[in-house]
Image (tube, rainbow, N blue to C red):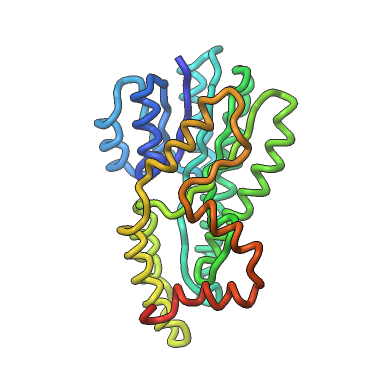
Length: 277
């Protein structure tokens, strides 16, 4: 039986990927941060899936999770690791608390690396195993008031490139999936994060416009199935592509961005946080 570890499995694309792999007959170990989400996911999956509490910012939590998986798999090894855990801290970089910036990188970048380091010995036991990093179109194109999030996803692009080259000689394939906007709880969580920012009259109107935009994105974005399909392909095909985009925005916007002069793109992007737009 093929096996996979999925982090950030409590909601959104991580939960949907876990359910899909479970239904496809995989043995899944799902890392979930919140107890309530863990209970919901446990009800949605079969006994092939083990749901475990995981904090990717805690070395002890990661080590304990990896130990449980290693004990369960034994000499069989791990077929796939889906590094999906992530969050977003929107807001003006000038007023964004530095602790938020640190947490942004701890979850989206350092956590991904720390988890992968722990599972590489298990992945090496399976010929053709793979690491799937869940990035974003936000790692290819950046706009204002999401600088921390974009920086973390740009960093993940570099990590994917470096690790692909480092692990290729051992037969561990590294893939990055770059979804466009998807209808997941990240939008509502990001909108709530804006409410916790220090008040600042200089940015107030644009932050209010961004909050409205985030709320609309949660309702108007494509379903998570697009991203799930790309992840499933990345872990199942014999020779996966190095990158998978998901959705028209992830495919078209980066190509257009390369053709548009910086200042013209800036004017277009600023419409996102312009009141009334």
